[in-house]
Length: 192
Image (cartoon, rainbow, N blue to C red; front, side, top):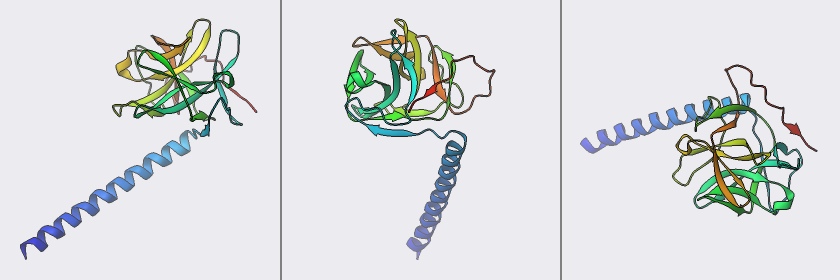
């Protein structure tokens, strides 16, 4: 008889936890879908899908697109353009080429930050190998607006250029919503 009582308590606790998880997950997903319809489209070998958003540029004006790719147990934001033939991500002080990848196709806005800070409303675009969330970042470097990733432990945005990883103190982060003052950032252009 005692084991039946224990089983009933375990079942009741399990149902309670399952209900709580379902309620929380439906709240989070509906908020993110309603307030920020971020969309990713799969691609590979330099492919840029229709509807991709220009999020940066090289020093000569060549457009750069936000990408994310699986590498070494993580999902890392980075950049892509057709000529790369891959998504280029920052990892271990290097610029790593990865196929396949996802390309960002809209939703959100860019908000200024620095020193590893991640603004409220930032879009989680991936996760590091240790499971920590990663956010898309862009920063001016070598005459271009380079795309990379940020999380507080980095102390800045990690971007790539010329085969290497660089940490930049001042950057912008992709966000769904921003409650702070308007930031005079150039609007992103939709292509296609």
